[in-house]
Length: 259
Image 1: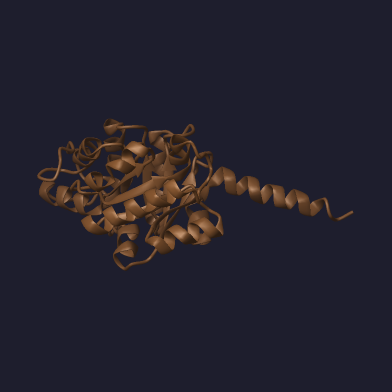
Image 2 (image 1 turned 90 degrees about the vertical axis):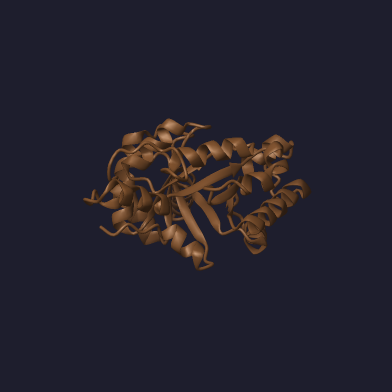
């Protein structure tokens, strides 16, 4: 199996990379659903919900085979689980609530092998197809494959966004807009002046330090278009639960019109 991080490839071409969040749907069939729907990557969420390392591993292997990039979110600063997920097949890690450059640096170092980091070596992972290769080749290719995301979700993080973006090894900074609006006291107001200013600061910092700007939690046309046009390229495309609920509601309403 040739290891390809399709997200990194699309972003390098200046394209958008949209991911489908999985929380309640934890079987490998979802990788084909996401692929057929046109998503680029799977957001395997261990921060909210019951998903476990085993689920992430199986979904990651299936996603890579289907042509999707599996990226998992851990809980705050959970470096041990992040490394287990990479060893199980994930091609990227999303770290929530990164407020300082020190937290970003710790995350980057935990997920990359020396000399870029301090990740422990456990042999060739599923993301490299368990191919026989030297430890030097495994570590080199793994470092090239991994995609690391720092989530910006507080006013403290926004104030430090330039320093966070400057951290080597972090590939993307992504605003978790719902948590950010909560922290700002403007819950759910995606067009608030403080939210717009936060996106402007994030995009400027990413441009300065050659990182990818990301957007999460926004799915309406007006606000999503604003932040994509501003420069956001790595996008959360909605969760299995939200999309299933919306489709189920629409179908039930349709049947209610038949009599």
